Length: 221
Image (tube, rainbow, N blue to C red; front, side):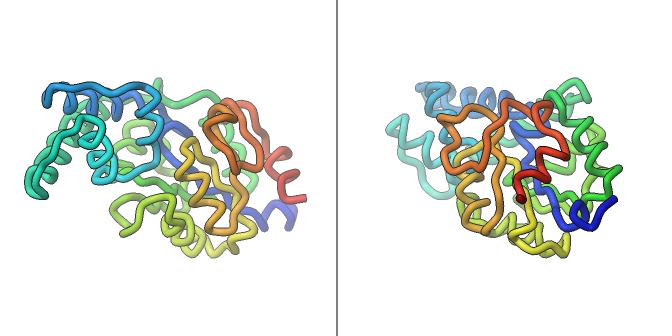
């Protein structure tokens, strides 16, 4: 393990980067919207990626032209989450996205520090169900931050816990809000998904099977 390798740290978003939970968010939000008599598109759903539960609900209610009191919104958010938790409670390692396990294993073997930086408030359950918890030196999720992406708080806190400087951190993100948060934190961002959805990324890869430690190191040069 070289000192150069030791000088980098990797911070991963969860949903859509490591595991395929995005489909469950979509199904739960869709169920909620349908219960109020309207629907929303896959394109609109892209705007919910990496966004907090409260902000997501605000967007969905606006799309449906529905107004709710603060108390009603809290009840709707809790209802959506209960459906979502029921779905992810049945998750297995089958829901790991391509390349996830190998990349995390390789980074761990190389002694590279890793953190989770996710808006999810259910990350502990997901990491346990998919067997990923032991890979991370730090976990910062929706329970540990007050501001949601694109605010950089989640990544700044993750770097602090890792003892890593911002310029030494590589962020892996599948959402525009996350890319913006990583850039705002002064970190390099690897976009995971499609180039058109992730402007501002240093590079964009289809999934984690498309990147190696050597590729990650090259980003720093």
